[in-house]
Amino acid sequence: MRKVFQPIFLVLLFLLIFSGCSLRKNPLKMEIGEGGIFENTFEFSSLDNVLDDPVGRAVLVYLPPGYQEGIAENYKYPVLFLLHGFKEKGWSYEHFYNIQTIADQMISSGEIQPMLIVMPDGSGRFGGSFFTNSVTPDGKNFGGKYEDYITKELFDKVLYNYGQWMRGIKYKVTPMDSSYTTLDSIPELDSTCLQPGIPLPDCDPDSIDVDTTRWLHVIDTIIVEWIDTTVTISEDTAFFQENFGISGHGNGGYGAFRIATDYPLIFGSASAMSAPLNFESLLDLIPTFMDSNGVDQNGNGYHQISPDPKSLDRLSCFFFAMAVAFSPHDPSDLDTLTFFELTLSGDGVDLPFDSLGDLDSLVWQKWLDNDMKTRISRIDEDTLRNLKFYIDCGDQDEFGFKEQAETFYYALPADIQANTTLEIYSGYPEYPALNNSFIYDRLREVLKFHSSSFTAP
Image 1 (cartoon, rainbow, N blue to C red):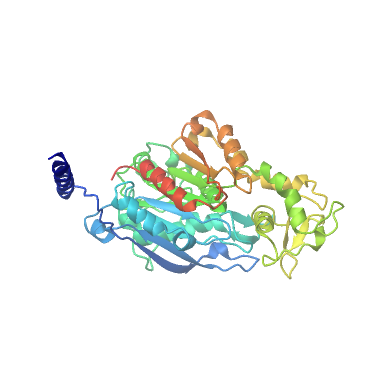
Image 2: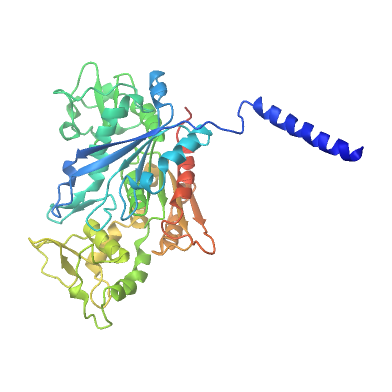
């Protein structure tokens, strides 16, 4: 009797469990909605450069599941700018890391809220631009003005195409016709207009072209929104800021932090995956650079290094990419001890160390001026008070970015550190946590961070 009862009991238990599942509001078998990624190519004047890197760039935009239904119901979406890593492009997040699959799953399961994800191309000759403006001391656009490309031209296009459905944008952006106003033609508001709580009508009328029914609100020379004269800046910019995030991996993580701190009234959250945030530890990699390029202890072979990306290893390309971004050679400077020519017309870059591996103090200072630990120490804490940061890095990062992340984090002022999350993660015995080993997994953490930073739908 006992032997018969036990199988019957197990069958009844099985039926009870699975019949209960069929009645759940959230059954175990989850239907995953499908979003979409759309790619367009534009020409960006900010990227017109001496090195002849292309001005035409592909921009990918992820639209979440239910996007069409959402806009039909006037749903407003937050926006995340996602900057790619070194030796990659904007499409890398889809081709290598399956960003659409990750975002679709997390949105459908309720882990994150629906959002737009903008993935631009910021690649340069050596594999990365660090999303900064590469300009010679005499003002020449050397490697491309990548920060302007993101914050002015691309931002403008995103607003034009999606502004009506972006959270924090309250009015439809005027169609791009003969009356369309571009960033280049918009004067900046004076400092009075940027003070919290000052209604727009009280601003200096000479600081902007006045329209009796509508104002174009500009902060830090970036279009923010079309607003009525009854809306105050402090209320709307805070809401707008909370729903704009920027993130990146590697040189894109550096770019995300740089852009967010340069434009703290625009972005409310910034994240960096395995990014160079404190350049001092790069000095430990100079011997590796020398060895890989055949430079001996006496400096022989240094000036024979060919700055051709096809012949350089990843680390060497990284150093030259940083030189393009931070230390284009001054044509009036006759010192060529660390100079490398990149164009037939004689334009080039300076490395921050000479043939013996000793630092060139003037060039190194240019790099330090662009170091995030240095830059953030020079920024008024109050301007970053509403900005949330997320930093992660693998514990065996081959570029030393783990140490950079920790140094950067612990150097932050207390108020900023309180709004910053640092995560150092480990790999497995046969699969260490290198610079780009776990980006697929880390993207999930990044999306959760930004989703929680955005306002509730």
